[in-house]
Image 1: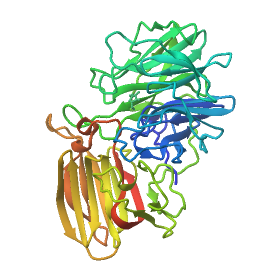
Image 2: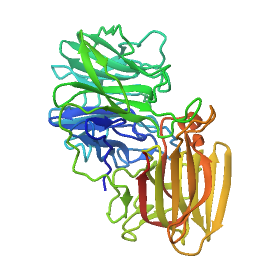
Image 3: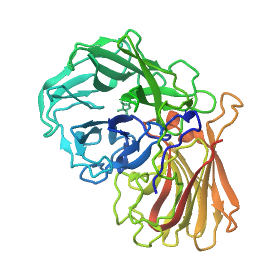
Length: 506
Ligand code: 6LW
């Protein structure tokens, strides 16, 4: 099963083009194909890789870092630690991926001939300091690595060797914090240095400078920031961390991250930072970013979605898990397998609960403001269930153990059993239903309601708890991720027959 992103209909397409927690997009073109990667933080496998032929429909084709030798996330990797902000580039028939593991290994470079994998073992870059590394090649093959700050060092991408100290290139707009996410491009007569600044929260923005060489000096665009939604009531906020790409017709486009806050004030976003697409024009040698909206005019070229049916149900019939399934920090065949009982996902507890960093968990991103998630669980040999999580300190779960179905809520320091109900032996269907608010009644209205419970054998939903979703938002929990909904085992072995995710958006 592979999951494709959603598109619009007719003459419009919908944004985000990749909904859910898929931040820090970096995109490249190889012939008629486009590939895009995102940050993945404490989740394993890491760095999701997407494919598209039209920039609008994206299908996840793999995860670049899918082996422990590529992605080492120690057990004490905090939520929102781990893998930050990759850059993906295509050159000489090879794909180049550079990324930071902030929880140990620092900056790492990987290559592949097929972006679906396998990707190489990591090439270490001990001489490259700072997050958000970018790769750009001069005409003579010199390779420049530019990082947040904004600094630059020449590297040999084959060995990871650096030459000379890092040089400061540009500090962004005076007074703006966090110049980061640099991408350096040769376009026409200039080298362009694209950055994000203002921080990844409501003040986020995109700025650009240009120069005649990849090492500068760089002249800032008089119209900076060329994109920001700061201080507006636009439904898409925190817009920044962008990358540029040319469409099939030669037109220019930008992928970037943004969030969709819901509810009253200050607005809570629960799906994390998502990937959006926006057109770009060039005027007097500067990019002018078009309007970013949730429904945008379709591009002028024919839409060519991949031949993949977006599927929300997994019966666990395949021997390997599809690439959208993610675990926490690592995943081993002993603790997570579809081979032990074919047609079932078996999770074996490492020992931890959802409050701990070593819980056995397999989930997928919540990608729609409203959705229904169901799973059939057999916990006769253990304890586990279905959870919606932001991190170890912010999650709601419905769990089966010892003949009881129990709802638990963890909100920061508070950890509460909310409701419980006896259940007869045998598998039970658990359900979590998220409903985004339609109407903001007053300034305190939350972004959504999370309804949690189980099903009677005839499918009737028995709601055990209805909880305010704001406590599972980034504005409450902090960090860089978004909601992930999935299955877990906190004791013994727990078997899941199927898992179903259904978008409920109107
Ligand atoms: C990333 C930085 C950012 O490294 O957030 O929004 C950080 N931008 O560029 C983590 O995603």
